[in-house]
Amino acid sequence: QVQLVESGGGSVQAGGSLRLSCAASGATISSYCTAWFRQAPGKEREGVAAIYTVGGSTYYADSAKGRFTISQDDAKNTLYLQMNSLKPEDTAMYYCAARLTPCGGRPKPQFFPTWGQGTQVTVSS
Image (cartoon, rainbow, N blue to C red; front, side, top):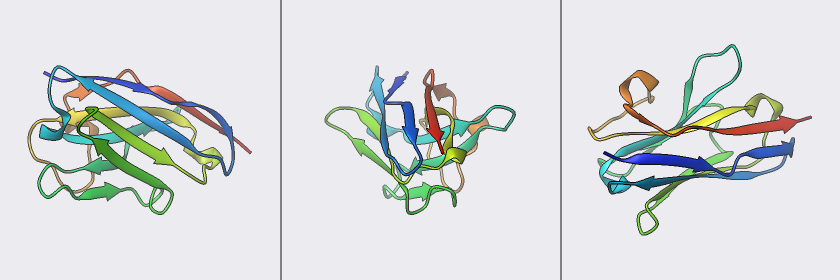
């Protein structure tokens, strides 16, 4: 069973950048479908980006397209989310998640059994 630990969150001004990391242990992350979710206060947890094990294709929410990039370093067993041109509406707790079975389409939190503890991202205007 894989364990996940996020890092890299922080406070930035609008237009800034952050790179989130999700270090995996206990299993090889390349065997998993992995995703980044976020949850703002009072809102549902939403899928931001995902990497699918079949074909290595990626998914991005409309809000993330053109600004965020998900990537994976198999040698470091780490998942990343590069976030550029950040907006105040990107403020949320960000979580990485993994599932062993293949996935596709928009990632839904109820279908991911393994989660990290989250890292806070705050974007000020």
